[in-house]
Image (cartoon, rainbow, N blue to C red; front, side, top):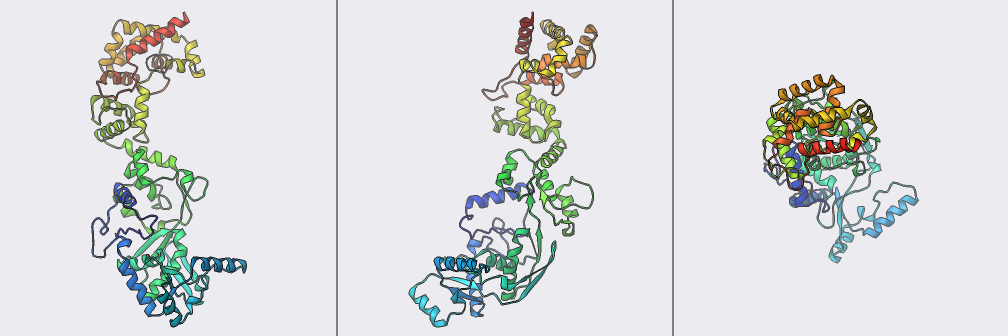
Length: 466
């Protein structure tokens, strides 16, 4: 595989953008045999460094009468375009320089008039390709005017330089978006004029947003690097992108890079546009996250936690290990771990008890359960249950249920509310144990409601009702 930087357009030719592209591709796990960073026999691999090559091939076209200098000003070209529109004709070049004499050209050259080079498009020819995805595609050259191949500033135009590059770099397959299909006519003409063999073309459908329009920034489209920053895994991203407009003929959705490479075939690419479903991407990412070894996941949580201002340092401590164990199976994005850990450290008792969902538990004697929890804290049995491990906590809550003649949801939900301030979440014993493991791991300013403060808040609620 060849990686080529198409930077002849000044609007895109920045070292920063090139570095971002290379970084994103490497993050995805893609590797190339030739490119600006690894070298190779067909370099240079930046189009901005290949100007002499392009000029050499423009000169060849001029020598054969297949290209010519054009001295039309921008104002002349705009006037021609307006005249064509008024006459309801295609806005193609019909300028005089296609038939200018040698003397007229030399006169303009001596005068220093700026000029570009245009490709002389043959008249009334049918150009046909066998597209690997679209099938047979044909154009009549009369739909195309003589197009620019080299600008007046010496920079080549995209359709010319990519054709030259593809030929010289021995590119066998050109797979790209369907919006490039109209460009193929110009490129094929350049190939034929220079005697280059044609590569095989395949034009894949565009990626669509949920409203079936072309995916754009207004739909929230973003760069690969930003997906990485949000906590997506490269394996999940690669898997998801591969399934946009392709499948292996089965219902299978999860592949690693090796399996994708072995299963992929051009004949399975669909002609219809694929919708970029962020919900599906998040689900897929969650599947990959849950499959990670606990140690690897803990390191990711540590790094994200430090970057997001939750943790004081990106170290895998007992607190981070416990937090990862609690959140691992419910994550879709690594960054979600920060939100979930912050939530576990809080105690939203008042908000929960004020909600309509809590009314049935309050009416069913929540206050009695709350008093029992406060009493267990006072005599130390609750603390012993939390520090004694999962079995100790289970034994404690089983004893509490027996003494209060409660079981099932009538026992577990009011205890959960009393100790965590919430009606949902992971195992209560493990969640509270997390509070005992924090030993300088959290960044300054992170709020933690420890067990003693939770019991005080619970007692205050009881006092307010008495």
